[in-house]
Image (cartoon, rainbow, N blue to C red; front, side, top):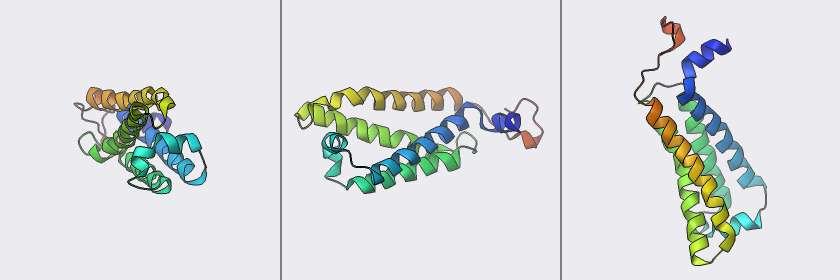
Length: 143
């Protein structure tokens, strides 16, 4: 069963599913926890929406990644947009907070958001040209 799941998901689907679960978990954390440092670092985007609403954005983007994980390359664009969107927005907000002096130590979190964004882009580019077919379609190597 795991082998069939791997043949269907491969690295592209695994990345979307994994990040989808992580984004949902992080979004829930934004909604239910109180973190003053995060509020200070995310101040630029908290002027647009409250922290709970941003938690909902992380959850929605995670759900998009999770739902599209099983789709073929080209059909999973919403999942990759959902996987890349929140770290891009939050990385820019943390950068702005550090540069403007609103929260000087926000710079320390920027590489984390950049690393996740880089991972998403690399996986999307490296696996985007392949045609992924489900193992149930009779393809022995799962491609």
